[in-house]
Image 1 (cartoon, rainbow over the protein chains, first blue to last red):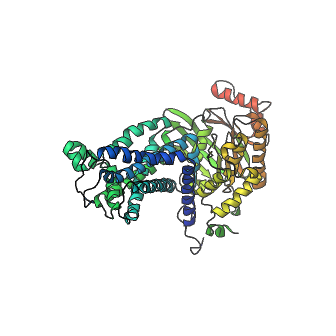
Image 2: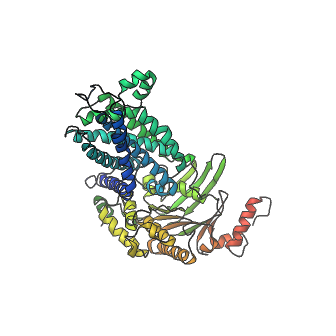
Image 3: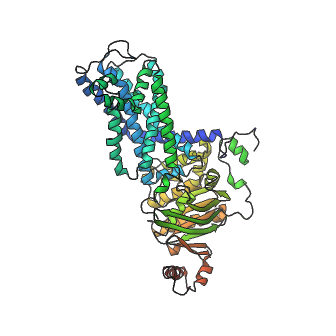
Length: 282
Length: 272
């Protein structure tokens, strides 16, 4: 082929074909999300329950001093809003991985994996699709939260977007990595107990780290090394037009590490090789 | 339109426009072995499928057919041996190999919540086929398999036979040169089975596609087919059906299979 026609990579696919593939995977994920309205509703109800009930109860108990990025005293609801946004993405990442396990059990996953495009790219597209869905949920939450007097600066709705994309990718990649190691759908309940809840509670989502340090220095360090804490802080600062560079670096590194792990695990010559054929097949 | 033009338009290359290098098998499997822990699922399996031919892979449940399919489609990594599709090694050049391959798995792999057309468009996107071209192709394949009137239906509203036909249509959408079907007629009634088998045989004649048809049903095998007999992970016989029957000194494929498997189970017995 002449170099003047279409640029192709080593696998012989043009950039347009890569984009077509990405569009197709995002489109399919969006269609599935639209078809599962209850998934959208439950994704919204969960953080709203925390906001309307939990925060309302705790606002009198937990005082929040002035800590960056806040410049004044804030209500507890305002404090936990970034944590709840990250929680939406955490649940969405795990939901995506649940659907990958389901797809694998039902056989749909094979449709994806026998595509001739590089497998790392297919997994990356899947990750982007899951993140796109999580963004819809987060902005729907922010819209409702606005009526609850949680109103960051207007520019914050824009500056938080890159942070949400990065944290969505990190949590989605984590979910993908976890899904590669789950052999049956039933095992997924363990993920809820051993991943989602510890990650959420051992973080700065519900209380600032200095408060945790006062209560338990050990837990403080656990929180500090929890990538979810950094996703929350990245979102919190971005929502006020600021950048938390340490959190940005941690989230970026974790995204890369989780993604590499997931690609490694879904490589047929490594991760999938341990599994037998689908049920009933020989 | 040339393959280059198609690519420039964002379409998958039209593989039919490429000449076949002489002597290259559609599928070549050389000394392939695979184990699940201590259990050996495939032992030194070797055979080839010629272009534009129908090859039946006959084996009982548990023979290793699905494992072999998972290796050919790169769902599992190859532990030992080599698999090539039109000369492209599946381990070394998976993209080149997989774009020439269409596959229908034993278990259903359709998205039940999407429509017939949406399933096809999704598959097309996974092969990098631009949307306009994908729509044209999906209309074409749906018409060919008699599902044009169900294009907008949800897949879960289709019958078992229609789902299988749709899976075959989907496998043909990117115009492969080799089609794998793993027990594609399982669970279907007699008419649906005959329809699907007839359709696949037509593809061999009309589109010069090489077909590997895995089955455990003797009545799906015709005398003019090539046959691979797989039993407990090993190839017991490979060649034209008539030759296998003659070599086994049997009346038909059914009794030939019984003789071959009996001899494999009891190596001390006289060879068939």
